[in-house]
Length: 135
Image (cartoon, rainbow, N blue to C red; front, top):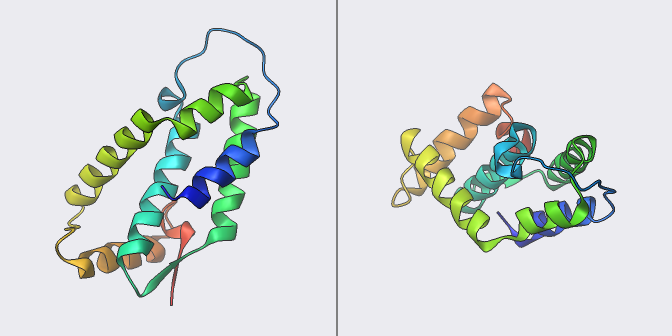
């Protein structure tokens, strides 16, 4: 995930009010995990395919959605910030993303595979494709 996206997510959640209660880890909350995962994949695709640009405003909107969903679930700003900025979570998300991309025919040694996958996601209007635009 880019530093810009991480900063946007952290900014969006910085004002979260929260009640301290027993909650699952944010990685186990699909409404949060899926948004971050889609954003991370979109970033990786746009970084590796020169015919695709990221839709930064859309990513910012998704960050606000993340904030809202986490707020509705009662997570505090410090809990969310810790999750988003955690080195171990970033490493876990990277490994998960690389595995997902590989399973979908993307090869880091062949940049064109990022383009094929990215354009297919754009055509499907998937959560990943919604964060990308063809040049």
